[in-house]
Amino acid sequence: MLILHNRAVYKASDAWRFGAALTYSAQKPQNPNTYPRPVTYKFRTWHEAACNQPFSKRFALNYRIRIEERFLSTHPGHFDLAEPHPFVFRHRYRAQLGYAIKKANLAFRASDELFLIISRVLLFDQNQVYMSVEKRFNPALAIELGRIRRQVPPVGSAAELPPAWRK
Image 1 (cartoon, rainbow, N blue to C red):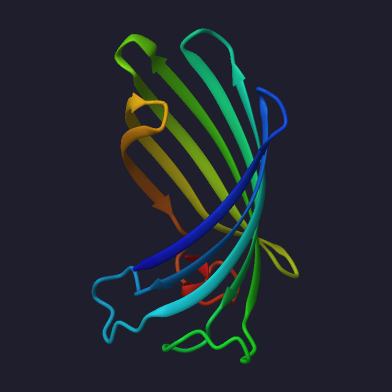
Image 2 (image 1 turned 90 degrees about the vertical axis):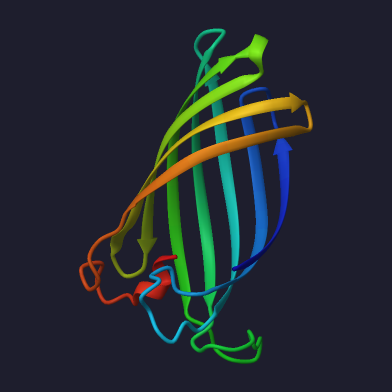
């Protein structure tokens, strides 16, 4: 898997941040039993607004709304800008609870993120639950260890969208 990611963030206040990004990725199928394992290429742009609400010295709620525009390659091989690409418009909403232990430079997080595809109708794409622990060494360096659990609908139940569009 190859992911190249550029991001710009504007901090409007202590609570609000706005961002935009461009991502290029090359991924093989996530199911290890898939054979052959062709690489799928895609470009993704996104825009987001995030709000952080501390409600004590240690606890904070963070909300994020992200809108993604995804351009997918229809065949294995290099991404050719001249070919027509399927376009997927997706909304993501995340709610996250954080707990910080400042003296130890530790943070614990639990979040739930809902993914919705916008086409002719609103479609459930996936739900992602994430739990992590972060150790901060200085303001610019931290290590985060986490676990993601994804819930995706069975193939064919999210309208007629191919499974490759739900990555």
